Image (cartoon, rainbow, N blue to C red; front, side, top):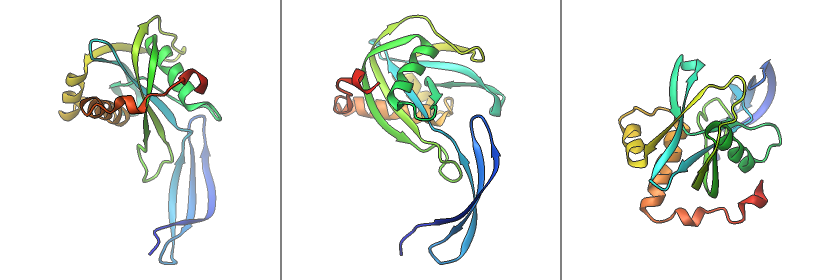
Length: 193
């Protein structure tokens, strides 16, 4: 049996600055209909930057939905039609002041596929240069460097809870340990901006 659901109707309940909420009627593989609630999100990008001392550059910021500070890799929301990789370069520089000479494509991450269409694009960066942050007026971010192995341990202990950060750091760690990171290097990455 093919596992596919076909949209029949779509009704928008809310259109916001960051997300839209719609309620769909979908045709199921068994020919019955079901209601699906969908959050539309433009997607995001995150970059795990690795220093020559094998430290990851993280940001700590207040995340309103959880009413607490969250430690995470620098990230940002994509604007409509924005270049994915260019957004990652921009966010890394804005939030941390980091400019990297090498970038690696770590793939895509679906944070909540049960109800949200958001895709987060994961990158790694090395050969870092540090300059000043360039935060938006509503951004308040503290920078923290942490040895990669400590970050991995904090993920395993549940102390780093952000999903995109977990995925990016664990993937980077696995690729480094298996000597496969170089395969993902973005050659001539400046042409992709």
